[in-house]
Amino acid sequence: MTVSTEGWENFKTNKWLFSTPSSSYADRPKSIVRRTSSEEAPKLNGVESPGSRANRPRTLSDRGNEILDKHEAMLDLYAWKWSELRENYNEKGIHNPSIYCYAISTVQLLSHIPAIVRLLQEHRCQDPICLACNWKRCFLQSSNSAGSINWFREAFKRDRKFNQGRQEDAHDALLSILGKLDKIAASIPRLKERKVADDLFGYSIRNEVICRNCKTKHVYYENNTVMTVRMIKKDPTGKSASIKDLMQNLFNNSTIYGYNCAKCKKKSDAPVKPTLLRAPQILLLHISRFSFDGFGQKISRPVKLNDSIDVSSMATGSTSTVYTLCGAIVHSGKSLDYGHYYCAARHRKRERQFVMLNDSSVSSNANVQDVQQSYIVLYRRAEHVELSSQTSMI
Ligand SMILES: [Zn+2]
Ligand SMILES: [Zn+2]
Image 1 (tube, rainbow, N blue to C red):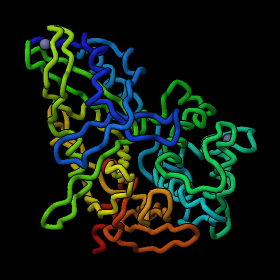
Image 2: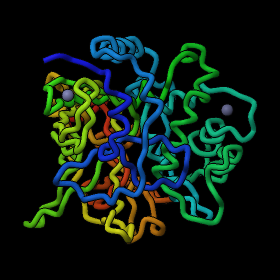
Image 3: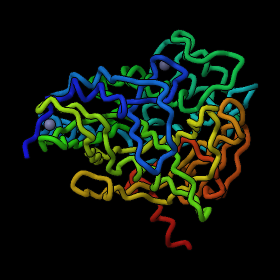
Image 4: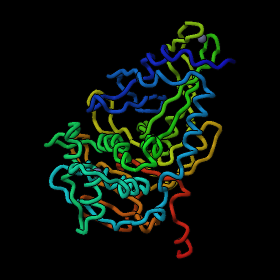
């Protein structure tokens, strides 16, 4: 069997594979949506060719090594544990003047990632509407019992991201903030050449496609930061699916119908085997709760959040990486356009505990398993979460 990547131009036009749900923003980063038989069936209402992916190097070994090597070198550049920060912050809420819960919950979740908090601490600039400066001043370092959020929309005013007067989406807010990380890091000399969001959250999937006709193996890669997973079909016994089930489903073998083989120039239904080539340092999962039944309704079924996830069953070469659950943004309500977002996160100073952060209110000792309608879920690598020093106390 030979390895070839020459079919990329044909592959990217395989409409069965590259389909995305409709998006609120034209410039929103797209992710490839693969559908397996157990997922909620999408209606193919949007077809995408990810042109940026077409320029990738053409051979497996070069690209694979580049992806992995580049990330070995960056581990010392960021803070992965709270103990690596010069200052940590008490838990506090954020006042919601009207419809800002999407922004508040997103800012709260990201404020529970040591690398992000350290970036904010080190950042300096003169821009009065800067996202990072205001995040620090009006929330993290504010001496009030609850911070403010008025600065959030201001920070995106120039790129017209968020409109006043309507409920926005926490996933859009998350992607927009990740899109600003390089600019935030630009004032920090050691991070000047880095792609910060990719360093912190980037992952790579290796897709192996075999032409049924000539048996040639084609390999394609996809890189992204927030991993979108889909709801899986309802279990007849009523058992809730776990977030690991949803993630595993993304890595199940599937089929590309009508795959154009560049080698033999024939079409066939080709099996595709995806594996996780590069596990992220910090795993951000987005649960697509959008139903493609034609009405665009929300699927509000609960998803069980695993305390820890080992990705070895999904990884290329079965490499083990273990993640610990660190937080979630929850969307309550029956429709995606209305409802309320709030956040549950591991306490910054006592990592064995979770806090519930709902606008200005903070409840400690929260049970994260009570969180039913999770929408964005945060996992950090198990070795970075400091649980052991308190273990002896139970
Ligand atoms: Zn600034
Ligand atoms: Zn072929």
